[in-house]
Length: 319
Image (cartoon, rainbow, N blue to C red; front, side, top):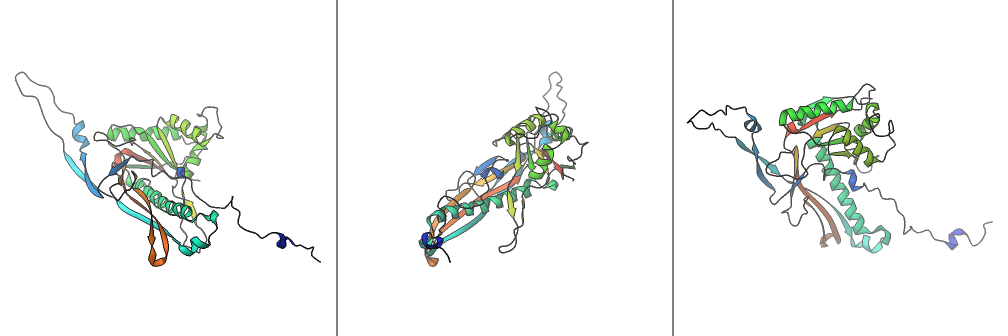
């Protein structure tokens, strides 16, 4: 016979108010807002000038004979366009949901997080398509950094010389897919050069700083964001957005009239109050379905602007 009162008589299970499971990717996982310089633009489309680099470097006969005019020449100009596409996603919060939901669900906050995550994943996928595709750059080489005989430091030096030989500019940044980064930081040639000897048990940011110093570059980005390619109702198919490739490139922290860059993010800020990154979150009433709509929009063009300022190492984890 059960003992009275039973557990069900003295306690009714309800959701906790101080714990839930919500898989939100940290903002630092996404590099598309940081890895290329951002240029706020007031119009959805426009043009920018491109100066012919060969005209600025051409060897000329500058000797001047007595009582003669100086030599002279010029440089050619062309224009290229950008177009800031609009990406948008929403979540409706119905009056019935709001009236019946537990307070800890925080419907508006959860809807905003959901919309933001969907849009950031989209942006990261588009970033990878624009900048982490080997065929988009002037030079792409296959290197197996999982091999004991490999030397990533020598490979990166070759990449830096190649870019400088084509452009006169030393590359200053690198982007790694997560798998490529893990392979690099397990490489014997790398570990033997890191302060403290062959030790890969270092905090992530310390490791990145040390590797950047070895490569003599300013900054390293690792693509840690993941995506789910399964349709709703099917088993999740989750994978990293960044692949097994590495991009060595030059990009200033901000764009200017007198400096080239491998890529630019043209962010449409003139679009009804968008932020400097072309992002806005709206909440408005949709009375027809008795709901409040949380809607996010991102308007930008992630454009590769100089293919010769990038050098890719492909499939570096051959194993």
